[in-house]
Length: 196
Image (cartoon, rainbow, N blue to C red; front, side, top):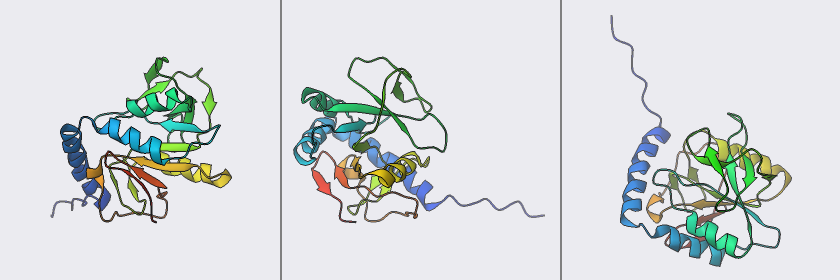
């Protein structure tokens, strides 16, 4: 009897592993990248009065968002952090200021406490593993940002900003119809409106 045939990993899974390595190398080579990315965001992305910017709390080698949060708070733009309240559901966003109490979220990320007010972001700063200039995004496989953007886009026009190291750019990604496109890419190298 033949042994069972092992299933081949999906193209997305293979690419995720490769891009984790690329991101790790970029984080080591450019420890100041978050400062430059924040400056690029602030100079390129319009923030009308009443803007709420959701910013991820960085984990592992994700591009540091602390300089961006500091710049947003200094100009008195409201900031929020994403929270996974239910699996397979859109994210919830809670107001955040540096110094606020944070607790561990569902995936080990830091999130605001439950009593922090829920808000609706108008700009979402989104982590990723890889991106294309057209606005394609390779995330971590949970689909949270795709579901969230789909829901928000039904009732408005939130701006989706991929936030990453320049080294995370790729020519093409194995995308599905469920993958929501990005509007902008911001890296330590610059800010680019997506062409997709």
